Image 1 (cartoon, each protein chain N blue to C red):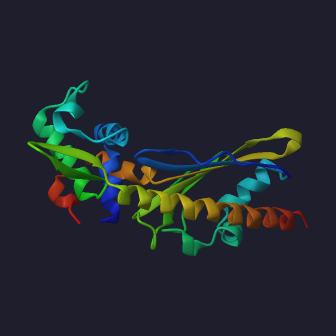
Image 2 (cartoon, each protein chain N blue to C red):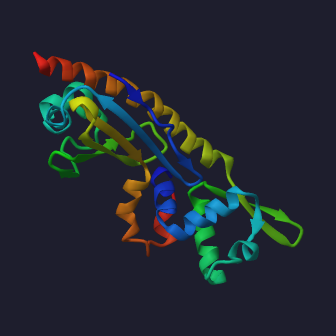
Length: 103
Length: 119
């Protein structure tokens, strides 16, 4: 599951699909607007994003709307939060080491 | 010693933390601190790395490690430390940590089918 997010976002087309959806949910044909991408290719990209937990679908009458899955964003947010706290501590230790190397 | 900690950037769909510090130490010394394993161990423990050796390195300029991501939602990530001469003989030290970097390993293999992507 974890590495799925990686792989899902490694592809630039999928990343731009994901970015479009971040602006608001839409259906597959709206998503394709402005992109040179076939309908099957779009379906495939959406399937990958869904299996990575980044995008979910919601049925709206006859249409299927796709939207960003908040849980996927939460996971990215958790990663960021953890390392925002981690690096300043590491840099403090680095500074201590640099001073010790002075001796 | 002053820190310029730029705000971590977050795109929708990629995650990257970019930090910038001004260190008093000379670039040569900072280089040894980030590249010589015995020194590196004292501020960046090997336990936090996927492997103790750098995955890429330009001597005196930058070194890249793969981070271990056990509890995180991501399989792994890469961190790049970049150094350049700073004001007053010090060092401008950059930390660029991203999940996108690790994803690049798969990018060349992008014909992976959803089958192999399934959890």
